[in-house]
Image: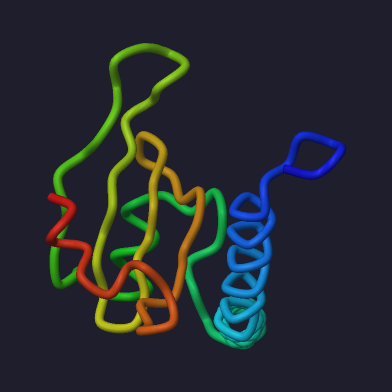
Length: 117
């Protein structure tokens, strides 16, 4: 132990953890660039816009491949969220209006939305 009460083992472990944390940095940077690319791609695509009704989405984009099971609805603070899966994107509805649409790409965590069913 040194004069501060820290053992050599503690110092060695701290250095090892810091070194291994540095090795993970490229993966984080890569994930961030994938997210940026994905957001830029979404801006150029014709995706359903916030506020569209389910009927408007279906009229403009056709029937979804799947209508996933609704979630939530337990209280006014947790409204029913519906999700529709199209080949290139997923649309999220609060009640019956679009709140968000995202690309269905390998860069995201939504490549298999049915598994969340």
